[in-house]
Length: 173
Length: 292
Image (cartoon, rainbow over all chains, first blue to last red; front, side):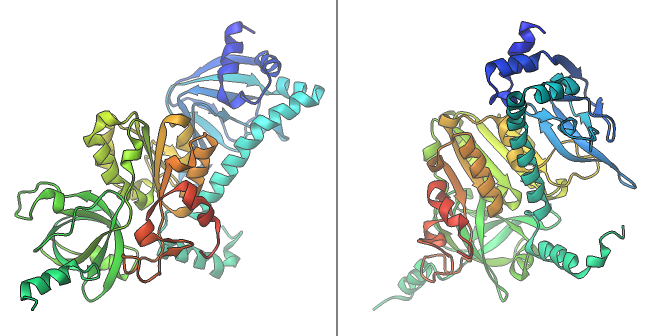
């Protein structure tokens, strides 16, 4: 661990809620990484062994849809975290991730961070307090997108009617 | 005894009587949205402020409230002074708006206005101006951005965050690029990326953190679906932007436009008169009450 890494970890807004000693501990499991534009960061279904704090650039979360190809479900920008599937079993990525432009980030060894969380519940709780708001925020954002707020009243009514009229379609596709 | 001229003037002064405006140009912005420029046939309506709205009449069909999306361009087509021409961006969502979207240059429509409050751009002088638009909500914000660009030195950063349903629904794509070239920090996100979309995907509030508005130097104008405005305002409050520095454009059933009929009542406000632009410290509680 270098002093430079400690400084970068301390400067990232995602970890603002951690106490300085906790950030120093976390920095021991961190290293700097660069992803070129278009480079795949991780693939859907692969083992989730890292997470990243994005410092510059942005990343697209994606999923492969048969017949439609790779579909972006969300983009993540500088200042946020990439990856939480490492937190809970089965520790596999639910989506893929690809750098949209050149990305500068801090990578963390997920297994090492999990061990620290288990060994020190106060540290683990502090880590969860960093991750949980982001998880909630993304859940709320997903729910809002499901509402299709920008649809015209007619389109929204059509969608609602289709949902109401065809409950049997669930599970048929 | 009142002369015919005086009677005509009195009638024209009545805010309930539409004036004839001719469509001088029409542009299809998206598959369901049209921007039209209107010139007065005789005595024009008073000058509109950004954020105010008109009642537009499609004769024989009905009348709808539509916010100003710009003042006229100098077309040199005999349509009168540019500042007295009106631009309106209309999305076809019902019988009246479908009829308005179908108008052709040369046709007449009825216009009443200007109604309501505008964006308080003077309150943003000396601050960064943050404009957050969702869907068709970019239309009422366009004139205020243009006004800020005309008087660029009076503001700090000009930041425009735009959310749209899909790339095909995005309003004014050419202008977004032009504004970017004029120094506006423009960020766009869509809910449903189409084939080939290389931009952001997600809700408009996801653009806020990268935009990094300064808590004490930001004035924010928000327009879009009400839930989107509420979330955007809450996100700004979380970034410590004071509620009185956040302005939202609210909508209820505007009918008379002059505060007479009460159709657009929102608690103590008649939105056609006391709105549509309201500061969030006044609006936040009212926006939470169901059926209000």
